[in-house]
Length: 272
Image 1 (cartoon, helix red, strand yellow):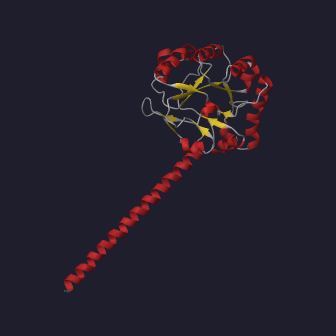
Image 2 (cartoon, rainbow, N blue to C red):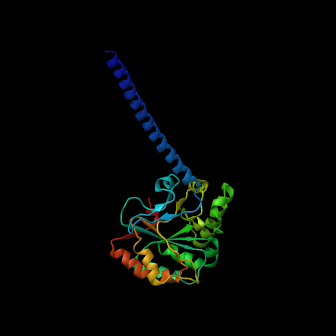
Image 3 (cartoon, rainbow, N blue to C red):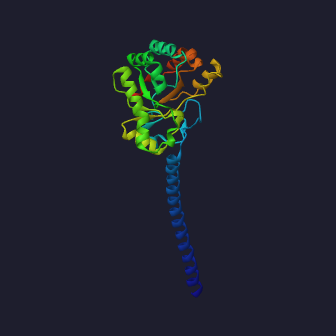
């Protein structure tokens, strides 16, 4: 009888220990999840350079800040609705003669793009800016001086970079500048995102780009198409530089190819 009592006590202790172990494991799992979620938020808050990781051809790449994290600040890098839509955007700090041909191709395909421009561009090329607007394209804010915006922490300096370009745009076009902002070189901070939102801007990153900005080292047609065609994906925000001779040369072929794959083009004011 005593042996049975001792056995039951020991067995009970094992059961109790097992219960405690399970409870501890469950608590650790919850704590671990919270820890990693906290680290993800912290990582998103500390990023200063926009970056992408392409996993598979035709699939949405992973940004180093998630679409959900960006959306809280009215910031986007891709349309998450999963439709075969492309948002075509161009960045330009200066003009070298390629933009008129690009505009001709866009008009031929009835594609409305967004051109993110700086103060130097507007000052030197008002006629091209007016043409962009007249043909239904969006001229977005790429700041007046193209600085590293991640180093700007105060609202006054941040606002001045955007507002100076707004004023110049209004002088040239007679209209208010659309509230779309792209950080120069993709450099940003969480406070930048907050300030842009406070000023009524949507911050627009990108989900597809390639090295096309070196004037003296332009990619070949094959290199460009080899990067851009297989990496297109639903909801893509495409960044091209309008200073690229290669882009001007292949744009007609590129848009034709993407259309043949069932994609349609939308203006970034439809981005969500």
